[in-house]
Length: 176
Image (tube, rainbow, N blue to C red; front, side):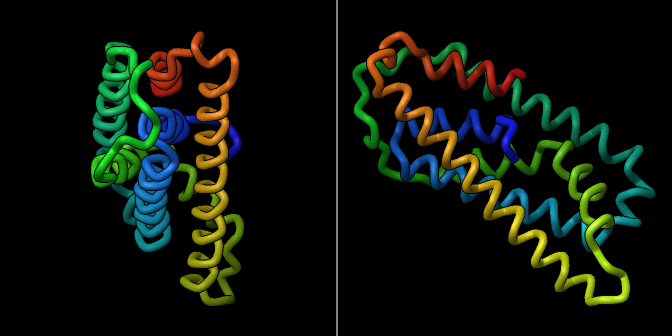
C-alpha cells in the first residue's frame, strides 16, 4: 500500500488537474477495482489457479497496454499551468479510470490470492473473514492513495510547484 503505483500516479494527477474531488472519484474507482480483485480471489481461488496460466497473461497484456496508454497520455499532455484546480464538472471518467487502472493490474489478483489464505482460519466463516480483511485493505489502500494525491497537490502549490510537470511525473509513475 505504501509503495506508489499506477493508482497513486493516476489519483495524484487527477488531484492536481481537477482538485480533491477528482482524486476521491479516482480512489473510489480504484477501491471498486480492489473489491473485484478480492471477490475473485476469495470466491474462485481454486478456479483461478487452475486457469491462471491462460488468464493471467491476457490480463497482464491488457493491463500493461492500458497503463502504458495512460503514461503516454500523461507524457504527451499539454501543460496545464493556467487551469485552476477544481474546474472539472463530472467525475465519472476519473472513477472509471481509477477502476480500470486497478482491475487491469494483474499483480493485484496475485497479491490477494497469495495474501488471503495466510490470514484465513479454515475452521471459521471464510466469507466473513474475507469481508473483514478486504474492507480493511480497501480502506487503508484508499487512505494511502488519497494521502499521495494530497502530497501531489501540496507539491504543485509549493514554491517549487512551477518547476514540476505533474503530467510527466504521473506518466513516469504509470510507466514504472
